[in-house]
Image: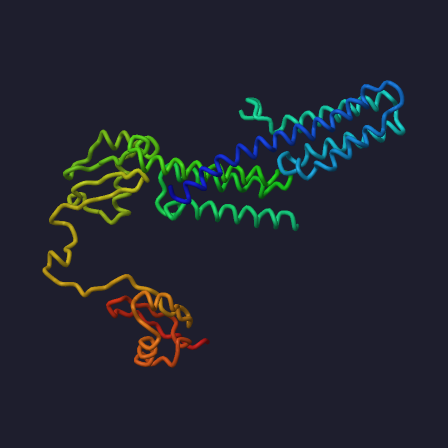
Amino acid sequence: MNARLIAACLILLALPLGGIVCRAQTCAHCDEALTHVDRAAAHDGAPLLAEIDEALAVWHRSETFFCCIVTHEEVDSVRLALERARALGENGELAEYHEALAEARGCILIVRAFDAPTLRNIF
Amino acid sequence: MLVPFIRTLILYLVIVAVLRLMGKRQVGELQPGELVITILVSAVASVPLQDVEIPLLHGIVPILTLMAAEVLISCISRRHIAFRRLMSGNPVPVIRDGAFLQSSIRKLRLSIDDLLAVLRLGGYFDLREIDSAVVETNGQLSVQLKRGCRPATAGDLGVKPTPAGPFCTIISDGRVISANLASIGRDERWLDELLRARGAQSAQDVFYLSGDAYGNIVFAAREEAR
């Protein structure tokens, strides 16, 4: 076997393996952010700003990773939605706050599904 | 400004590496599969190059995948004739014994004008001189002339040609390439003598010098800068 063939085989092995690792990381980061968003959304009383801050912190931490695999627009939309929810939680109506949280949740789910090897994504 | 610059550099390096890994065939004669790969690589590379919103990995991963697939497919093609036929097709004769093979020409979806144009481009203007012609798997036309129309070789003429080997560049624009000098079995002393005999003081006075192992030389002195 020549070096070129070995390199090709290694690349063909490494790319899907890398894909699997990336997918696992994407799910882990998104699930962590979703946990905080869901906790904030489940609370009926005053907005749980600490949970949104946690979600934002998770997102800031993972932003570089996400920008490597997901279009930057999708990554930015989650951050903007979380920041909007936080602002509304501080000064806005409760209904608007919950709407913003739902929007942030939807944006996170889009990022989570972005690199999923589903038929929808493949075709 | 800096971001597209860095992205361009990275993509450029990846594409150069991929083309180097694919080998020289990729640049010269292209088989159908290779042509597709070449077109796809440039198309895929241009997407993240133009849009900084798209992750660089979306360009690199397809390029690496294409390259690895091409290497694997060419390796399998080399070992299995049936697979090679599947990937590259067969050479198709279009002229045999001086006669057009019309069914083959039709099968190739060539018109007689297309075929004549390719023949003329190859320098074959007189159809009576052609014995056979084959459309190769890379789309090029190979032509064999009739026995009496082929260019006479040294053997036909009974002439013993002067031996000449592959020429190596010894001086390029005033710079001596020592490795090439050694490869034709010569040394610096031989070079100095040659330069003196040609009226050059040093390598700086030579624009181009090449030679072979049989002592054949191509020499061009450097012209005075105007």
